Figure 1 (spheres, rainbow, N blue to C red):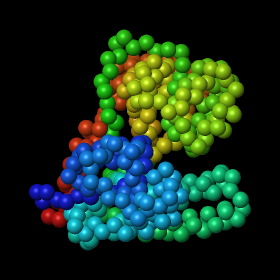
Figure 2: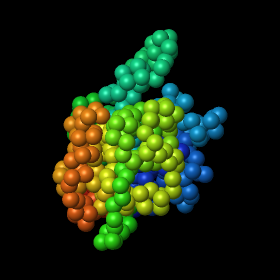
Figure 3: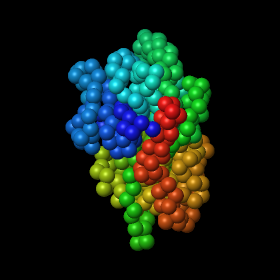
Length: 370
């Protein structure tokens, strides 16, 4: 491998801290001399990147861009194609939207770490059109826009030299929609190593994440409406008002945004962590397991690869209130080995991710430019 290849990291946007942004941070720590390119960057929300060289597109200074980046999705293909990356030997894109569509020279190796093929133009396209209360005219326009974006996304997928999937589940989607092979490297989670010997579980359950419709928090709320058990929900989002209206259980508590230390304390004490959605990977179940907390998860998507059935958690096969409550009852009756749960979680560390990524990029570069 060239002694010091020049590397660029490309990502869809950097506007707040979530799972994808944590992956970018790990990538930057793996390649600290890399430059970062993104469509829109909000440094106030992401002080973790203050030492990085972050280059933005023409979208950066448009109205509301830093807080409502989704408004500019129609312009994002053009934004990423506008970046001049001709001075780089390696381009490493982290993509769930348009960032893989950058244009590189033939001698530049482009590796795309794919969180998912763009879900709103592929497997969830009909949901986006039908489940957002849009008028018939806007629906027709939306369908046309998504059709054009789908064509661009397929074209952009061919610009990538090698794909890394964040799970085997996403590897199957890459094959389905892009007809490309991929290798799986699981994202990393930054771990502490809490002592679980004196850890005592309390009589409540926990769910955490952005309150969006596809995350199925409504199913959890309806399940706890029936049982009246205690539930804490950590997080905010566009679905919050609807979820609060749905709740009739006085023992369900909406915590809103909470600091990381508060969330960790909840992981330590909860009887179980609820994960009712199908995610591409899902970091929160791993965080919960690191604190010895068993996970009650929908048996699909990334959770199937990060939760070990009947050892670190319980799966349910249908996204129904009945199946969730059956799984909770089953989890209640089981004696969990917290240290075993923690040991399993720590296979997914950030250090492991960074090491695997470095080795992968080095080998791919040698093979690409022997």
